[in-house]
Length: 222
Length: 222
DNA sequence: TGACGTAATTATGAATTCATAATTCAATTT
DNA sequence: AAATTGAATTATGAATTCATAATTACGTCA
Image 1 (cartoon, rainbow over the protein chains, first blue to last red):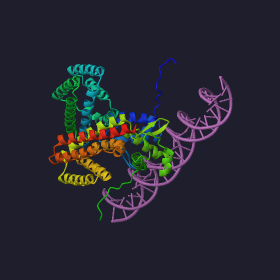
Image 2: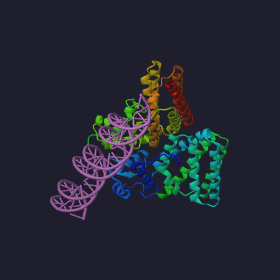
Image 3: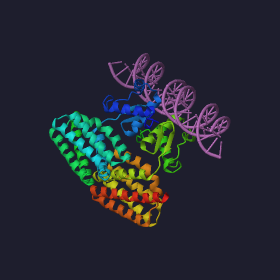
Image 4: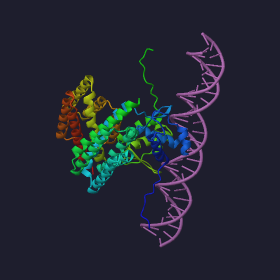
């Protein structure tokens, strides 16, 4: 056999649908609080109602939508109460990811994170918010990978998808941005000496500050 | 209207099925690692495959079963790796529940917990393991309720259901049992003075010790 | 004009049907 | 006797169908 074996991936329809609908919600194409137009989505994706409804059930478990018996599916609202519930849990999970990462991270993984960190600093200097956000996400994702805990990753991602939209739209003040960058410096320092306690504390604080930013934004909205 | 308003609960079939199958798995009627007999379950519960498959999708998101495309559903195995992944996450969530509980708990809730705690001590004295476990669970559940965070509750329960079986079957040594009771005393003390940091620390340690018990049991199994 | 009640329409929950993939098992070959 | 092939069986994924619940539209009456 010439080519290396690739695992044949043939995901079922509903798996694909979960991904696609998640994106629709995160991108705001399905606004929070709106009804999920089951029939339209079926037509749009060219599938029948069976896999669509399976996908909606999955998204409901993740909390991205809520199902009302006999009344259909609704995109979960990003309310203040929602954020106040989700952020502390994300903070706890992120703190744990820091602890575990310090235990399990390899030197290559560390250097990769440092590299992304430096790239991110560049985007901060040029005030390139989009690229800053992207690299920022990459760092947190890399820490999660280094933590080496699939259960943690799954739980975290499910929560993150619920608030990602808010995290992006909420513009940071100049001070807040400087603070966030400074917190990232602290992370790298803690990670360098594999100090799990400190990294956990920084990540938790980082999340709390992010929450405060989003909170202010949400207050300004409604 | 004479009677107080009760929310009319008419859960859909798949919701009911999720509960029932969860119990089957937790009670060991569906052993870990075994195939989930979709057809038999349909016959047993008198439903068609549609709601059954929806229920299986939900359970897969929770991690209680895993779905292999075109090959059906399997009860997730309780391996050492699995436990090593789940327990730290549960520990982090339980710690958070302690912190939040200290912020939000009412005096009535606190007194209720103290009352269950005293009942549990009685079962410890008479070495009534079953009732000890039951009241123990009640205390942790009460703390979770006092934490006042639905997201946290949902996440915690999903994980707890995955390891509950192991937690029950793993018999505690006499020393371990004494230690667990002592940790519970610490919890009450911390809760009394609403010291979130301490309660979080105790709960995390409590979980780590529980993990060690289960770990020893699993090693002894083979 | 507005509130109420009824009919028509639409959407949802669940069963059934159908196509296809996976597994089993017997027959054949080495 | 073991391994391999291929047909038969079984299970799964998805579409369709059907019954019922919810919503909307309409007409009636105050």
